[in-house]
Image (cartoon, rainbow, N blue to C red; front, top):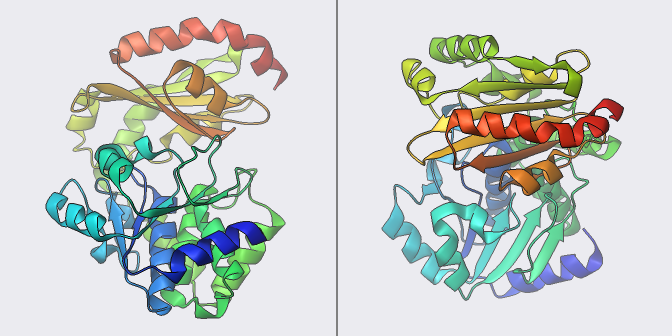
Length: 339
């Protein structure tokens, strides 16, 4: 974090009485970990800090230190409104456009609080008084560490803060295997371990708690796998009926798309998940090498993210969405073959 941004964050904190820290809709490990980590640090500095999520988060994250104190807007609407009305500083973490906060969007747009953005996605909006944006970073949790570092607070990182930041980094780097994992990332991880994070315990809590239904749903997903060799592409579909049959819970499909990407010679992978409650098809996109799923999703599926990991959505049916996707692929054949 550069000197100018550090000064802007310090200025926002100088007069802060009520701080609210917000993650994006459908929060993942990085959103939860970065928000809880920052909240823990601010509380140690005697600030009042409340973490708010637009909607609920997966069960496999609910062991994280401090998660019981997270307010869920969809469940605690009036409480969150009251807290936001009183907020003088709002941190937005792991998203860079207010519309990524779901039903919280109008409340944030109307807020007179000072905004601080910490995020690693591309093309940030210009709404914050202090913006710490770096798309080359592995995760927002790593950026929160660097923010704490810039505020000369690394010594304040206790085991709970370290655990939350480690979890955010680990989950957003695919256990440190994605390209944005750098030597600096590993140095941050080493510091978090020194400050109390226990890697094997964190890994077990995240990855070794699958239900039987989730494992059977994975079997269905793999059975639905389609490989388009001529485009070096593979995709998975899951219908609402298949989700219901396996008692789907939020987070159950986490990581499924990576199985498609792990196939030899595949450089582009997607999973299409029907969501009748929202009348959309949710899409997760992954790639290897130079092929940008961020650009692909922004252009065709109302989404975005990173070069190699992005999300999107479609308002069409599942079959229509897949048909449209296949019809688009010829435009990208050369790029995919050359990737």
